[in-house]
Image (cartoon, rainbow, N blue to C red; front, top):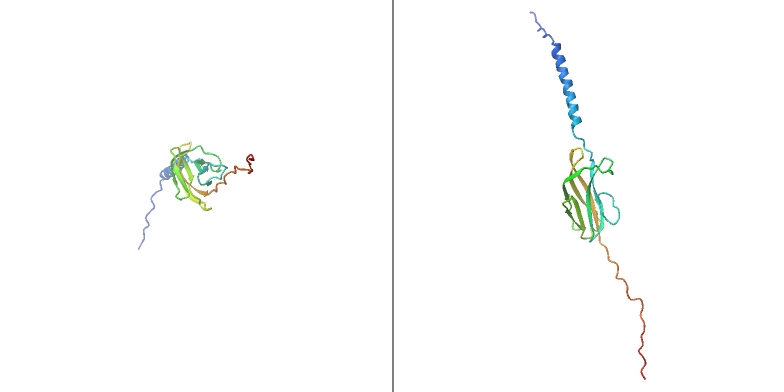
Length: 172
């Protein structure tokens, strides 16, 4: 009994070369597409609060009755340099009886101290979409804390400094 092996079909060298060229072109096109994808400049956003003294980013400490404006700030990877990105779709999540948070039309947030938070730093978050100067668009979420302190008002100023005996003219 004889076994016949099927002869291998002749290899088409031109076809193999064409396939390899197509693969190389596909790799090149993928690299080009990757290079054309927008790279985001903004690496994070930060909450910058106004107040009587400079505060660390993302931390607000203020008194009952005071207000603070939170400016959402797009930052580069160094965490300090402004990226120049434009904010949109800003939202704030903060729910505690110690303070109120109101989103303003200019994408800032006004915080008002309402009650003592008993030394507790109450957490919240801000979410914002940033459109970088190169057109790249990304959404970021940043946590922050708010501590509200009850302030005891100072005693009233003392107006009277001394007393005197004032005698009337003696009568005869």
